[in-house]
Amino acid sequence: MRRSAVWLTGVLAFGTQAGERSVWPEGEGREIAERACSQCHDPVVITASRLSAGQWSARVDAMLAKGAKVGDDEIDPLIEYLATHFGPASPR
Image 1 (cartoon, helix red, strand yellow):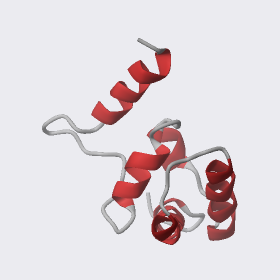
Image 2 (cartoon, rainbow, N blue to C red; image 1 turned 90 degrees about the horizontal axis):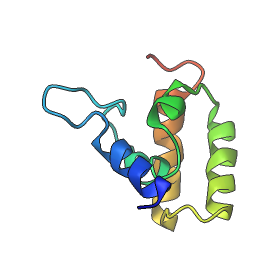
Image 3 (tube, rainbow, N blue to C red; image 1 turned 180 degrees about the vertical axis):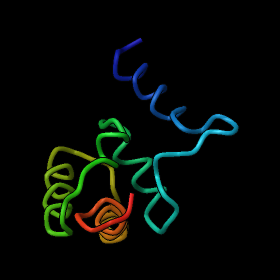
């Protein structure tokens, strides 16, 4: 099995055990972030980021250019979710 497949399996299981809390806060865009971002990135690193909306937009654009699987209708909700929950002034 490829290393990435093993890692992805671990990421998908992260925070999903009974009694465990997910690192992804509730909100519109959560499912998109869980699916799209966690394919290549450790969710803890993403959720610890404190980027502005413009920085998240640039980061998402860069990931799209590298082949991230995000639908056109999912881009704005994803950026808004990331900026709201993982922006400079967002609560932890």
